[in-house]
Image 1 (cartoon, helix red, strand yellow):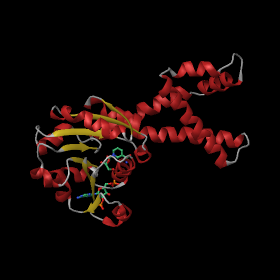
Image 2 (cartoon, protein in one colour):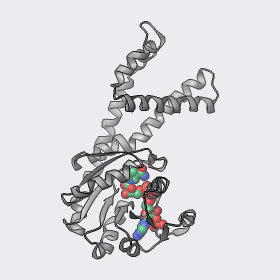
Image 3 (cartoon, protein in one colour):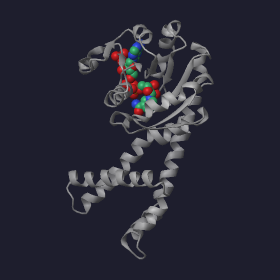
Image 4 (tube, helix red, strand yellow):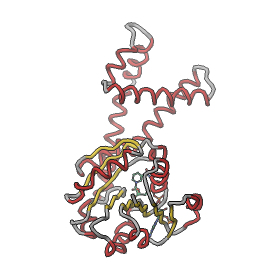
Length: 264
Ligand SMILES: NC(=O)c1ccc[n+]([C@@H]2O[C@H](COP(=O)([O-])OP(=O)(O)OC[C@H]3O[C@@H](n4cnc5c(N)ncnc54)[C@H](OP(=O)(O)O)[C@@H]3O)[C@@H](O)[C@H]2O)c1
């Protein structure tokens, strides 16, 4: 696959790292205006670092756009005459709709929106995807790319904002839960480094258990809650203090905010 990442900043470089680690590209162009930050990528034989978006587009088939929203329309406009029937356009730009992209490149182009999260740099992103009508023919290709960097799910475009909250903001929510567990572990006598290790790996184990077993979280909870035991005592106290409720309310607040931002 010949891939170009247009806008190799935080997210673009995370995607580039994920693709390079999974051996998912025969050639890769990385573009941005200030190339200093891309020096380390010049060492890869199949990577070209450039400020020339037009060259990157004409030498690649899969174009992953990861620029800030205000730059996107003008960049698309500047390359749209180079697009042909082989190009697959994947936009990671938050809030930029399929119809706005089609308005620039036309509805015949394969257009896909992707909402990954920052865990893409370690091959563990939960990435949601949607496409325009033409793009349905290439959605499996996009799934295959993002599956190499974690997990992917195809959803309707109307759910992309909700997916942004659960998966992109979700990284911050889970980090805070890990930090809180770490603080609890320190209070119980572990040093800070040990406490974080215990919290991180227990969190990973819980997720892996559900992913590999396909079981409901409550079934796994039943396995570790002895009647009158310490786990149910702790869990119930957390619920009295509003654990599930505060998480759900936080998710809904984030969603309300992202919906306001979109309208504004
Ligand atoms: N970070 C996340 O977790 C996340 C998750 C999902 C979606 N997104 C979306 O991903 C996009 C990028 O986010 P980010 O955090 O990676 O932003 P970022 O770090 O600012 O990266 C954007 C990059 O675009 C480059 N750029 C600007 N103008 C350019 C041009 N004309 N040609 C080529 N490159 C150009 C900038 O570099 P120069 O200034 O050197 O050109 C910059 O490195 C945003 O639209 C955001 O909504 C981000």
